[in-house]
Amino acid sequence: MTERTDRNEQRVSVNLAERSYDIVVARGVLDNAGCAIARALGQNGGVAGRTAAIVVNPKVDRIYGPRLVSSLKGAGFSVITIPVAAGESYKTLRAVERIFEQLYRHAVDRKTVIVALGGGVIGDVAGYAAASYQRGLDFVQIPTTLLAQVDSSVGGKTGVNFGSAKNLIGAFYQPRLVLVDPDTLKTLSLRERRSGMAEVIKYGVIADASLFSRISDEIAGLLDLKSSFLEEAIARSCRIKAGVVASDERDMGLRAILNFGHTVGHALESVTNYRTYRHGEAIALGMVSASLIGEEMGITPPAVTRALTDLLVRAGFAVKLDASLGIQQIISLLSLDKKSVAGGARFVLAPNLGSATFGHIVSDAIVTRALDRQRLM
Ligand SMILES: NC(=O)c1ccc[n+]([C@@H]2O[C@H](COP(=O)([O-])OP(=O)(O)OC[C@H]3O[C@@H](n4cnc5c(N)ncnc54)[C@H](O)[C@@H]3O)[C@@H](O)[C@H]2O)c1
Image 1 (cartoon, rainbow, N blue to C red):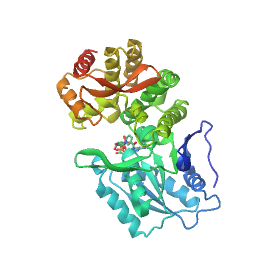
Image 2 (tube, rainbow, N blue to C red):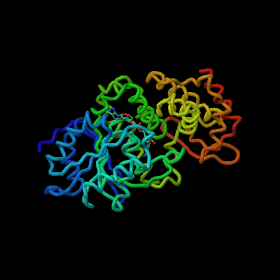
Image 3 (cartoon, rainbow, N blue to C red):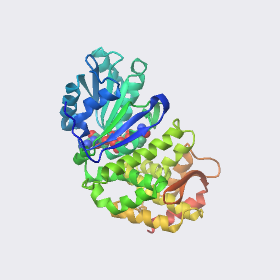
Image 4 (cartoon, helix red, strand yellow):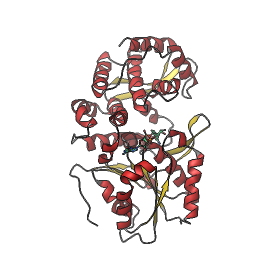
């Protein structure tokens, strides 16, 4: 097969000893997926007899499924498609069981590779199925939302919701390869792309001031996907997360810095029953809260809050806390957070653009002062 090349192609190595793998970011890489997967599985000489099981929801399958199937078949895989319903409410054990049923029905063997094509829900569900079926099948992610490209497909967390708890059941399970095709973002709504951009902005704040400044210069072109910096912005985001994950794969410490903006962000999602905000919109508000809390703690310079809010506003995010949201209700949710301790909730704070520290215990009084200020922005 001929492989298309993108001169902006970026490659990120995730270094986890024998579980190391690459993330390839390139426009059009979807059409090269078959060859790229065969190479990553060490099957340069052909993949005859190997099955690729694509896990995908019907909408994404309609748009991108045929190209992936044709690329996989072209590389010699036998292909089956396992449809899974879209949406967070289907991130369940039942969805995993349905995948098992299909794998069983097709009598697939242990050389089968599971290919997750879709957003974070598909990646998490398919990854968990891959981790458990026959005690672990090869797994490849082809994330098609910006959130999945820069966040959920990096780091090996897979799993499903259970009862009212998010991601309660799951496994750390690394893929063999992640293929990111930024062109797939064209069929997402602007709101969905913007939501993912909140995480990209977060990486700039916590770890890379020059990334933050490039995003700031190019925000319009990044959101409409015309900027040639897009591949690099995605790759640098993945590299930052991969670096953090490499030093704290099982989430025992440093990985916490990835939660910048997520403490208040999660509370906002929860207080509004996950109906009002896309995840990134809540995180954008939560990053502003964290910055104001950092100011109140004497850790974050006001210039950081100004740069962050300026960029978020230009990206189209709300930064002001809506008056209808009860501050006390938000605070009571913070104390339920599993990361909270006696004396306050734990926060990740930014002492400067491009750096973050975690484990700050912040009193309710300080959170209240910061959120009061955010209401008046
Ligand atoms: N594993 C991790 O480390 C990790 C990290 C962050 C988030 N997550 C999880 O990710 C999930 C959220 O992921 P998400 O924001 O990608 O949402 P999602 O997976 O629900 O996808 C959002 C919607 O976009 C559609 N879609 C996907 N790609 C498309 C495309 N290219 N064109 C058109 N439509 C498309 C999907 O059909 C879906 O309806 C949550 O369940 C969250 O817990 C996991």
